[in-house]
Image 1 (tube, rainbow, N blue to C red):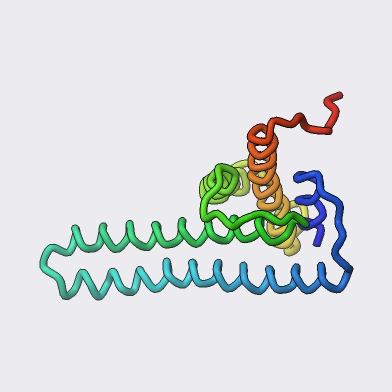
Image 2: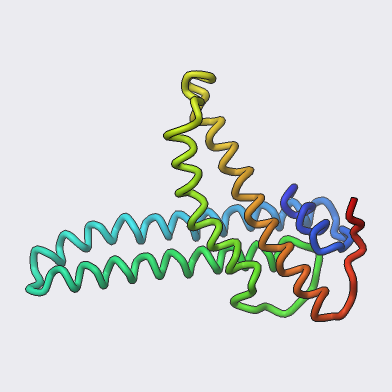
Length: 177
């Protein structure tokens, strides 16, 4: 629900939906996104099992294995794009037509797919959460990752909002300090 409020701020729209409706939308989106992301991880994990069977039975094993690996990652990227686009379309209190791809969702997907590389480097090489927090270090890392993921979604929504305002020819009501 906090992401819903933040997206309303990004798109500069007031919240007119009731509390129970917002709660229902938020709960439904959590279930849908979890289903999509777990499905993506399942595709990636089941793909490694598929790769082992493919290598043991196929003659040009390297080519088929590389093709199957690329297909798995393409599916994963596609599901990530749809997930982010779904969040950006459903959560803000803004009626607009559905589009499969927007520049903001592409930017958010790139951040979501490339962000874990930098985050992993930070966690492994720089941060010392285990020494600082002990067993709770994993929970702190998870919370930081949730914050980072929300920031990526908000940056993608801001890109969409600014492009929408530019296409409409209006200036943003926000004031720069």
